[in-house]
Image 1 (spheres, rainbow, N blue to C red):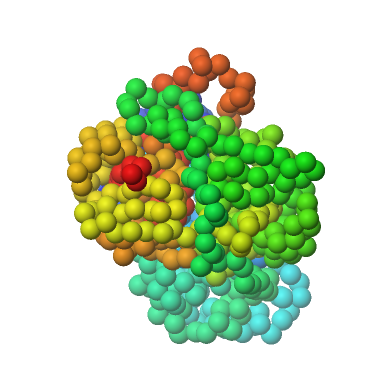
Image 2 (cartoon, one colour):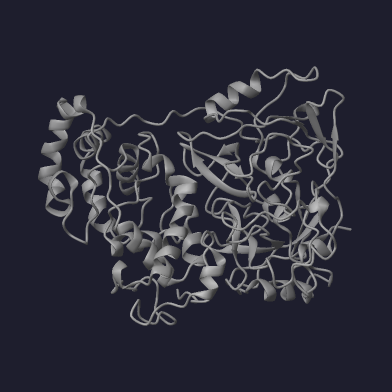
Length: 556
């Protein structure tokens, strides 16, 4: 696989990315270099001040997202500390997330591979290599029998590569000293179970299978100086068998802006505009499209999934006591892709922070310790481990209904009807990849199964065919055969927040914008939404990235 050096990152400052070329001595030309073979031959000191600033800004996204708890020393987090790795090793771990890592959150991180240039990834690796990993042992653990057992195991099997107490001096092997306990335990089980198929797997699998989980805990005690406490697991709503609400209609995304002259973008196909009714008490918001009833005010405090479940089960609002946690498609259905920070109607839904506005949603993600959340700064979809805390917004529907399961009909002509959403899908792919503009044109020009009114689906439509109860791929192969798990699929929706979401000034809310304000062609049209059917995540990527396309139309 070869990356284009024109592709910009998702978390950096866009103005810097476009304006700043790489300096001549910073890195070799990477236009035709395979990312899997790339070697970092420059140092942090070789970078210009502007390049160093850009790498730091792009790294901020890692801390803003998953890795902040590790940096702050939250022992149960499954996300590792990123500091202190050899840059080449760090770079290779990012690269190997491109469908080689099949466990937990890293299965989503192939986005980094697609969205940033080789040079940008290398410079991020160099930045983290300059940072020092903290070491905060528990004195009681240092004196424990587990620590001594771990020392014996480690010195016998691990120290020759990873150094004394895991403090590696070799660029080939990562330092483990001071790493997060749950992360190390997780990686040992992933190697043991053949779920971490990185380039290091051949070395690590035999050692991981040599020992049992009690040994893993002792190793963790020795190299981290802390005890491993497994993340609590529980039974949460799965959505299996729950019927769609009566009168359900698939809501639009809320995106009414114009981003391109090419026909077929999201705003070209309005059907069911976002529409809500507030109860007389002001406490409940009814979605007039999906027929779901929502807790209008999200929780005032962040909760882990278990606290979130207790919160919903104890809720009594407007005489209803059957509140529950939302399922993924339900929570995504109230996102307003025409606004950001937050990407939601702030009149219909209260108490939504502009940042740090992730909300728990279910079912379980692709790991027993992981669940889903929608991050409402921009409405991205990602899994998150149960040690995390998120906001909560409960939901209910009459008759125990839910927007989760689809009702497919194979029409026998290469199309699939979904009786829940009223959509007709292209069943068979053409096995070609396109940039976003060409994906629009492909669907616009498609003559397939006797119809010529095909279009690229919007982000909510793309999510609708995800089966969140299965993974790799997270789609029903009976109806959509040969859907690749290791590729992304374009949607017609623009990621309006763009790669500068954390840095750019906020515009007026959509309802206050003029028609001129909504003409964003050539302005904030860089990133577009995609759906990945390995686990069902949805995020934004540069429009020049080459992804797959599956077209849709309305079922007559």
